[in-house]
Amino acid sequence: MLTQGVDTSHWSGKTDFRLMKSRGVKFNIAKATDFYYNTKQPFIDSRWVETYKACREVGILIGGYHWLQPGIDPTVQAQWYLDQYFRTPTDLPPVVDFEDAKYTTVKDYLWRLRTWLEKVELATGRVPIIYTGNGFMAPFIASGQVAWMARYPLWLAHYTTAPKVPRPWDKWTFWQYSESGDGIFYGTESLHLDMDYFNGTEAELRLFCMIEEQEPPVKRKWWLYRLIEHWMR
Image 1 (cartoon, one colour):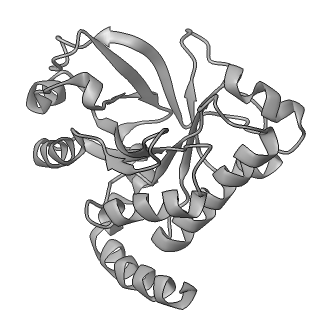
Image 2 (cartoon, one colour; image 1 turned 45 degrees about the vertical axis):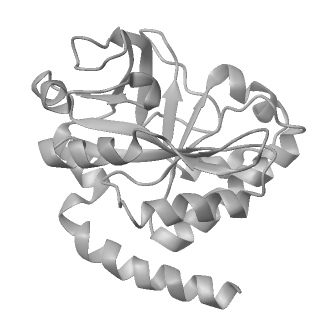
């Protein structure tokens, strides 16, 4: 059983999330944070706050991803994501987008990924999700340095009817199966929409997100995060 979802960003334009909900969408993994490649300045996706609020309002489970820049300190990137995460705590665990082709070396980009993941997990108490694709992963797999990635849930980008899971994973948790969904049908201003599945039922998705336990732990983790931040100074 698969559960229908989408992923949106400022490219989706203005979105009617109530209509989207009526079309059967159960979750949205939206772009939250990034850094400009040239200026190295951080930014929040221009649609993130309104998307977060609208999804919460209509009952679409919300997740937020960070685009991992290969030329910026991963600790700084993690800090920026965490600052937004604790202002807008998500239903889904934290997500990192691992697909920037401008990396210098395989070893360096893997170091940045691992550093981001470890810092975010420590601060939130949640195991982050990795978004990536088969083609992008090929040189990293060939390096023989990816076994450690298996503990993180995989959000796989593969536009096919039978997704191929890259090593070191043996299954996908989320699958971006199309980048050309009918945006108008699902309520977006854009004609095309990224479409996703969760590998399980809606009840299993809610269990994966620990929905019933979400609010109290998030509040507690906020104070834990501040203490950790103080200790690390």
